[in-house]
Image 1 (cartoon, helix red, strand yellow):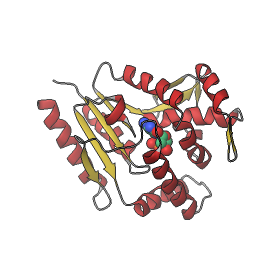
Image 2: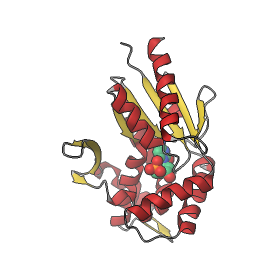
Image 3: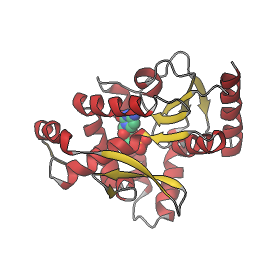
Image 4: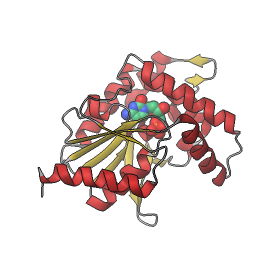
Length: 229
Ligand code: DC
């Protein structure tokens, strides 16, 4: 059967990764979360004092890129892929608000994007891949057989993210989550390097008013159509 590349782009906290993982599971494809790669570089920058609220050593970050090895490995007991930075499992740490608050600055750096896009293309060589991010359909795989652009009302996205963080025990206010989403949407769409754009040939899914199951069914139908072409 035809193996395809499925590119899923969209705004922060739209449920892209949840849906991408589920599609990959059902089709027995590889799933790659490119946001995790930008988060991994951000964690390195935070730990090495290259970035903080009022300082960013862009030059030093660029010089240090060769020291950062970002990879994914499947955890057999959890049956899911987790993110590694130089052989350390950083899956939990990169999901916190500190990394979220600084990742946009890191994602604007041309050299960071060039490094990660190269790795992402390498990962897609064998096809049979679902990749989610902001520039997958526009830059990483402009010829992807299926491009999905996900969106939802920003307040609904903030509420979902807030509920998730609370369930994990994070102490955070709704307003902090909302402001982080508004500011990342703004950074993602306005940066000069590979901004978030809706490719002309992408299918738009607005999940403000539909359930996860309805959304998955729709995406799997789209994938099935492309696989049969
Ligand atoms: O998908 P996410 O929220 O985990 O992504 C974290 C950040 O990384 C997000 O604010 C934008 C950036 N990002 C990007 O610029 N390009 C990608 N392909 C994926 C994520």
